[in-house]
Length: 300
Image 1 (cartoon, one colour):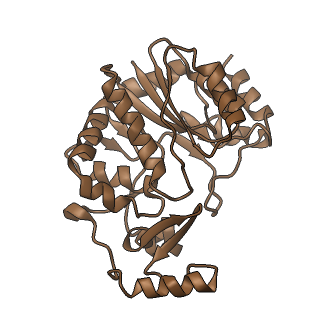
Image 2: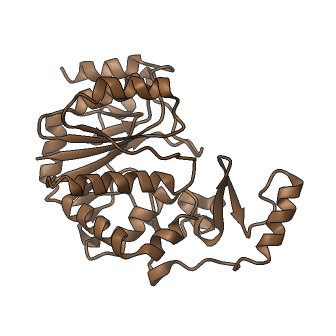
């Protein structure tokens, strides 16, 4: 069982190093993308301890702003690097630098081996008011043109989204020019879900080929809000591999109605440690490092 991990990181360098060291085995590889906005000192604290490890590679850095396509692009770059390496992996797993395994490497591989080469990806059909009620069931993310301006997302032709009155006036004028609704290429059925997954080699090869052959689809998603929560689901659930996708991302995440997961602390240990999930997110050693120590102790 060989696993390639793609890890998207932007802060907490010591925690990233700890994550890689925890997951590292001689069969596995790590493709790490560090947000180009991360300052040189923190990048050095990530790069220096890990770059000498043979099975770790740092990807070319992109500026990753909240909600834009750069997160998908960084992931696709990781997939391209994996394919180009010529090494065939059984699974590729997408993590962030604030994820952490809550099972041993041996157990993780046993679960995946029993998975019969199926992929693990949370998904639901769109629109879904159960999941994204305040966004027209998620359709606002696709129907409007989303642009990132100075690190902030703005939507057209949805009026009243700019905080400055002048920009809102300009945006409203542009709204009269842009089409009222955008139409997704290929007439695909829409799906959303968690941004993080465990995909089989079969799915990874399919995604890489799909991206090369469907430039219009990629252009469309460059102006989708939070596309990492829609892109992979929509591509794979409309593919011949749809029946090989299990609706489970194998993660424990504490959503409490906000846009961001809650930080797990030591008091939450019993919430996730006895679950069947392989990973939990998210953690922050500056808020509570003891919980990571307790996870490590549970492996002994």
